[in-house]
Length: 452
Image (tube, rainbow, N blue to C red; front, side, top):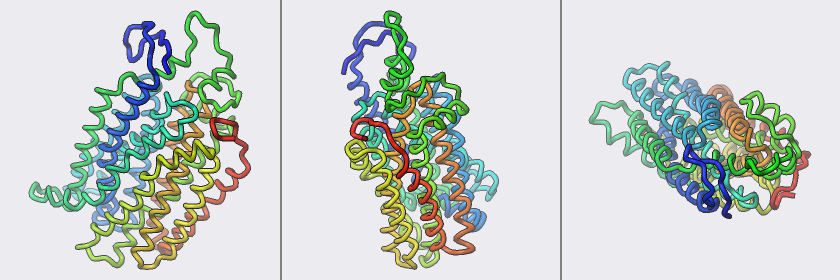
């Protein structure tokens, strides 16, 4: 697909040279995949030991709160990052998110050296910037995608995290040992590597992500001086608003995003699917290393945790392209419902596993697959349900909601496992799926691509 671009991109002079949108989209996907690999490695290698570091410094209950701080940070940072994207595009927003994560990693290392828990929380909040960047990248993959390929393109950005994220947990132990001679405390070494990865990812985006996909999509959607103004309904449909007929609004930030989501049933389902899937995944996943620590010695704990989390992360990301293909072929709601079924199965398997490491591994793998279904299909549905003018704000709202849901799950999971145990934690996670199941069954979705 080649089109005329009548206004400049990224500040370049306006011209009439044809823009090959498909070529720009391919290049954007390639760069997003590269930075997802780098950033995914940085985020996961720190996440692997974050709970254990929190437990070492402040106890089991604190370990869940440290993870929650990181999730809250990722959620809260989504708001300023989406604001930056509204004016500066995806490139600036993603780079700022990664640099915030790098600063957080530095503070975590300092907190470990000083054994200072409050600073550990501050660092964890900023470290969540790595999550913000990784999640927002999936939306950048959709900006210039054709309607019938949105699920696949979004899933490619999600899948790219697999390469770094699956191997990173197994790199945590050698990364920790490699810096022992420097005086970096035990369990803090992996965060040094996280910092380096985040800085590298930010640099790649700032230098090479040109033209910016969001700014390009806006300019392509805007009428040229020779054209009559596009009616609201036509503009929404052309921009993938799923034929909702919703008026195109000015981007008014978080408040405007709330109004848009309130008015569009498809957007409500999309944002609910993303948030619920993340809540269940975080609630169960974050306490699994602590559960494994109940019967594995310190000498083997990191290796076992690394293996289990690698399988879990493989479930989250490795089959994402298949999930994206199914999203385009079977429809958004069908894949959301499939993801919910997998989440329920995961809670059943992990919750009844006892001290069986193999069964817990199977449960965590199913948990990752369920998350992938709700994340890919929900994000695709949300992105195509709103006009381009409000898209960054609505996507920021989605990530804020998702992050706060995950933070709530992480904060409560430590107390639940301490008071009632791991099986009860899984039971509560399964109960949380029921409201979304009811919403998905009763929401009528518009026709988009194969969805009908």
